[in-house]
Image: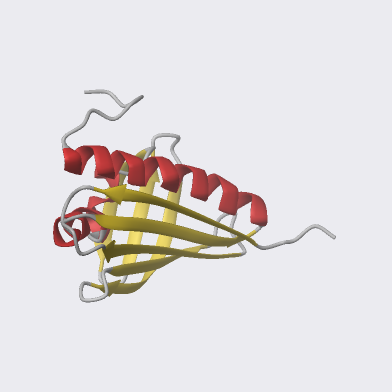
Length: 140
């Protein structure tokens, strides 16, 4: 049996305070600054529309934007997904660093792999931005 639903989790340790990291990755409108292939984002209330360099747009419901828990959750609505849940957590490690964890659950399972791969690249790019390092494979 081939599973219909897939789950992927990526994480990266960032040498910056959790509050600073959250200000970037926890802001639904700032996705294009750190997520690969995203060219523009529009947020209206609990809805976000994401446009990609490939010309694809995604509509998303913003489910959780919790600055105290530093948790962001969203659901892609329609398109290729039958079901989708994305969760991003910024965990304070108590030493001036934090762990950014991005998890995606999707049906069909193959889309979890696609989003998970992009999310892994995205949180690595966010780390580079926040730590002042030049991201590999990204322009200036």
